[in-house]
Image 1 (tube, helix red, strand yellow):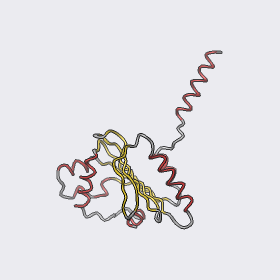
Image 2: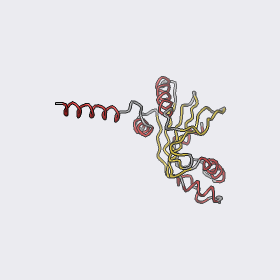
Image 3: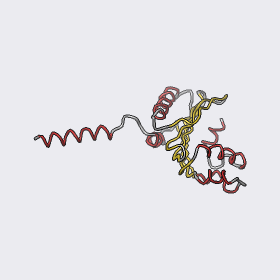
Length: 179
């Protein structure tokens, strides 16, 4: 009888450990993809057309560390304000997880947000860019790569400025991000 009780206790503990009350960012993306208030895209890094641009060696290394971008945007309307607040709260709760390390905060005339990452400082696996404008909605971009480095972000921004990429292939999300 003691053995059965121990096994049941162990299974109960494993069940509680396995069932996290906080949704992961990946789960949030999947759950939101079917919601009509969201625009969702998975893009290969190659869509940025940065391989055709004259880049410095450090910019080329930064570009090669990218694999893909997951973009999720909630378009706010007059009729979905309550859902907007709920979804914004969910994203903020997920991104408050201690595994996400803050890289920078964003605050401009266009809105507020922040950049966080998962991984180690010298080997980042995922960069998360979150921004919201209370009149338009919010956007959440997961930049997935291999052994990215925070210094690469600056290099990537410089490479993007050199490119003639104007948002081709982004469809509705491109229009949303342009405002």
